[in-house]
Image 1 (cartoon, rainbow, N blue to C red):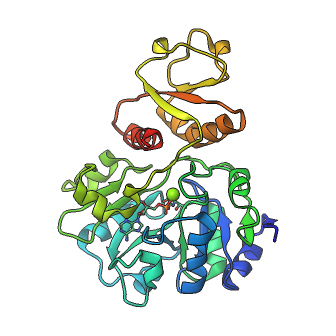
Image 2 (cartoon, protein in one colour):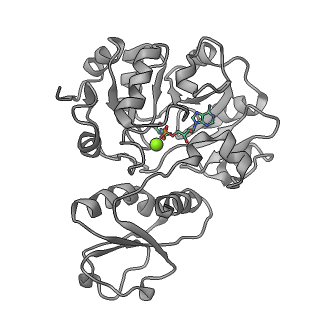
Image 3 (cartoon, rainbow, N blue to C red):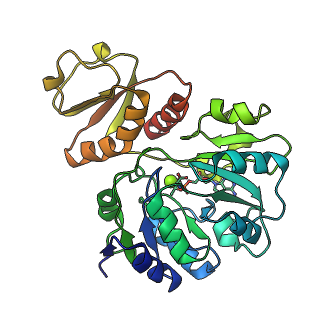
Length: 315
Ligand code: TXA
Ligand code: MG
């Protein structure tokens, strides 16, 4: 079976309503969706991606009314976040209704809610008419896809339909905030920054890679975002001995860019984040063995960027 390519949200939604998998663009990265209330369809997401079955999925909606189908009761903190950041690149973890299939939430009593702000994602979700469970549309462990081509490279033949859109605006995933317990905790740094959240929820705690957090965010246990090449973090490109099987990605330009196989020097942290996963995939295509990535200050979007760099580099 080849994957059907389309630019029509309505055509893509027909596949999803029939119980098939559909990849679709969002402002963060591409998602791989199934009808959240069709447990059999959701189960096929895990086989298509090779994803561990205990890693829960985020449920995507386009109407605030749909929250009532999924969440039991919303804490005040959850309401505050939804009011300020929906639609947008934030996922809020809340206590789930019993009707949400266990396969969506990895057996947890909570569910992640996200309302994308990408117009094609919104048109697709609207046409689906049901909440859509969706992880990032990559093979498990690979860099998240920021173009439809990256989705196609990973999943052609494994999914029924791919809704083609533009390149993802952010290039990194949504921020995941757990609001199911007393103190709200960031489980995954993402596009909405800790500073932005703190402005509306002063009690927010920043992520700490301790055991407890690993238990609360099952996804944090697995290797992620990794190209085939080895990742090496550097403070400045002057520390590197360049060679043609090496690549460089960072803010400062190296003195001898032509000595590298591939180079991407970005003007801003936003541009760096936008380039990251696509650059990793280009390095794989080019047969790069080692990717030198410049570290950035872990503030604002730099926090999410450093999280991805560290995790892509850890074996
Ligand atoms: O930007 C995004 O969030 C993209 C787009 C497609 O929306 N989606 C995405 O999904 O990145 P995924 O599955 O690749 O990452 C979701 C993360 C995982 O680390 C998962 O463990 C965590 O969110 N998560 C989902 N539901 C959870 C829950 N109920 N409790 C704790 N963590 C949860
Ligand atoms: Mg993912």
